[in-house]
Image (cartoon, rainbow, N blue to C red):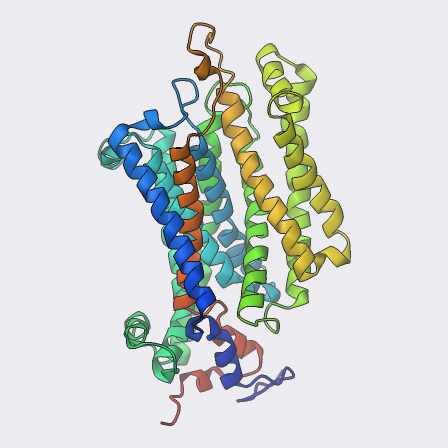
Length: 453
């Protein structure tokens, strides 16, 4: 198709595209201020809870000698899971040349950056002595899975940051040159610094394309490693519920389910809040719905394997654990996750109506809630049924109930993640301007032309 300098079949000019895709940056209203106030307030409450924990030790939590992991590690596994969507959308789909994924990739990278950053922070919050974190780098042994986890999380964060930043450079140069009304001077200076002297010549675009391709390939093994290593932290422990060889792929596929649901929710928020219906179209939601069904079907297969085999053999320790899940104290949460969070979404999203933006977003909200419950079920019930005798310990050691301090810190993790995403949306376009303009038939040279003053 021949490109023109102004329009394609959509009728969108470059000025219209810029106006639409910078709405998140330019618009200021009371709702935005209130949203940031809520996020900062709850994040601040969480930091206050962490200060209390540092002052008084982990005794302020509901954790004990037996249940030494609680909400913190459940949150860590959840955020690591959600972060994998950056690899799925920005790398796998892009390498497969699936064009509809392009407008979605920046939202996916925003989620990936926020989630992997929070995963690292949560681990520090879980430490009774966070000042000893440096010992992992100074004295860590390669035989320790903790060292593996720190390494892959840090590497994944670095590559995700590059995958977010490098395709942003042409947009930053455009914002630097256009000086749109409503953008304060400090933002203009920020864009000037981050644009790295971009002038939009053909060689620079080739460099970006080559660099992105290398990063897309690199992030696949790193992304698979980040959740595989996390799963090994469980699977390498001789406990009923964790002693499984399936945990690597089981965790990875579950991560894709949670991450895809998270991207769908963020797409809908951006579509409604910033008037992006022309960019996040019904087709995008339809395809994301199909992707969610595909990931959920694979995840269902792993769930059947995970519970059918031990239930068939019913070893004593496994039997106690499974009884607690199937009909014991965790039965409601377990069946909610399996039926409402997995089976029903598969059945509903297969219907075209439920792949429309609003119904799909509602289903995705249920999926994301069930995904968090799933991580809670992975961590807590197993710790409540150790191999060691438990009859001669205090009664409170038999059970785990999060305290108010833990809940405060848990709220911090969610609101801090939303705060990171919201700040990125206010600083940078939520959809790539230059890639959108190219898809609409606009010559990239026009993007580099400074407007007449």
